Structures are given as C-alpha cells and as structure tokens.
Image (cartoon, rainbow, N blue to C red; front, side, top):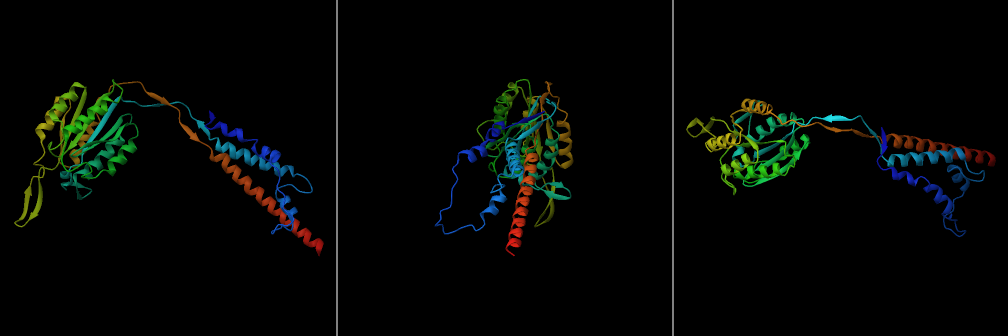
Length: 340
C-alpha cells in the first residue's frame, strides 16, 4: 500500500493563491534609476499581461507546485509483511587489543600479519553468517569498552571491528573486566529467554583490571552465560638473530589453563587458534551453537518514492521555462518586424 510520511505538507497547497490574493503588488516609482523597457515581455513570460491570464500556463505552474508538495510529503510504498529470522541468541565478541596482539605469527594470503589482522579477517565471515543473532562487540586491553551494543546490524559491528587497532584500550590485558562487561551487557539486554554467548578472543593472561577472571566466570555461569574462549597465537615461529635463524614460541604468555577453566566452567569450550585454518575451523564450530527457539519477528519494508513526483516537477518546470522563452523570442521578433 501507499502512504505519505509527511502528509501535512499538502496543507501548503493553497499558499500561492493566498500570496496572489492578499499580497499587495509593488509598483515601480517613476523616478527609479532602473527601468525595464519592455515590461510586457515579462508579463508574457509568466502568462499574464494585457491579453489576460494564460490559463494553460497557470495550470502548469499549479501542477508543478502540487508535485513539489507531494514530493515533500514523502510518498512511500509499504511492502508485504515479511518475517525476520530470530535465533534467540545474544552473542558478544570480546576482542583483545593489547600490545601482544601485534605479534606477526599468522599467514594470510601468503603474507605474515599480526594477530589482530587475522582475527578481523576471519571474524568478518563469522559475523556475516550470524543472520538472526543480536551481536555486540567488546574491545579490551587495560580497560574494557562496549564498542557496539547488541544489534541485528551486522554491518555496523563489522565496521567498528575493522576500525579497532592495537593499543586502543591500553597495552595490558584485562580479561576479568571484559567478562564482567559482557555479563552486564547481556543482563541489560532485556530478553531473558535468549541464549547468552560470549566469545572471548585473547592471546595472553590477565595482567590488568579489577575483576578476577575466574570469579567473573563463576558469575557468568550463575547468570546463564556461556563463554567460548579462543587462545590466539602460533606455537613456534622462526626468527633471525645474531646467531642465525632460531625457533621461538611467541605464545609463552598465553594462559591456556585459566581460559580452559573459564570456558568449561560456563558450559562452553576452549579453542586454540594457531593459524588461519584453525581459526576458520573454530568459527565453523561456533556456527553450530544450539539456539533457543523464539517466534519470528515480522516487518514491512518501506521504499521511498519522493523522487518520482520531484522528477516530473523538474521536467515540467523546464518545459514551462522553455515555452516562456520561446514566446518571448517570438514576441521580440514580431516587434522588430513591426518597427521595420
């Protein structure tokens, strides 16, 4: 069906009539410094003058005015009701932005990249597949921040994740504070029957914050929140040193024991992402999380159509101006012939 979002704009329809009816005309003083020599030509241009009102041209002006007002009233087409799939899952991504995420131990498209870049690349596909989930984003380092509240707008979540950079929240790692912020965010979501999931991505141990990670995990379990922890980082990389090439472990700071306890204590699982392939497998497993079923939500798509009457008004306005110009040129030619 059709509707006008700003229908009250149509109340301005008689405005030109009121202006013509009640506004007093201004006459040029005889002593004016500037005089128009052939005023009749301008009268002909607007459809008035000694021959009276040009009704067809006046009707066209009225039609143009009506179309402009119709466009300003914002005509909209309301489509058929459609169902929006609702999985009943509230899912938070908590991404570590501490200084250690700058370690380049992931290969992406044949190039060595840092851990945050690899996280963004794989998380993009994961987020795109979360149709029906409400997704939120927590960024943490020394502090934890809710970057994106729970929303169905997956594109916005992806944009904010892409804009994140290492050190944005500090150089240290506050895992407990990130979990605590996740608990508060999911508790404030307002839908009790939804499955509450926190995906925690980190490459280190808790070195900052005021909340102990294990205590935060206990509180999460009591609130019915499931935590899936992902430890990021390779087991070994080859580096060049003064004594030649040697193998090192860039993930010595990763506290896998604590992360495993956190995940399993809330009914979740702990995963280890050592490379891009492992990352992809982990997200594939997370895609299979069992949702709590709720009814689908319906909506009716709305399409703006204001450009239709506006385009017609523009075309008619150009035709009206060209017709007036043609009449003026014809009148000037006739006057010149009479003088000749």
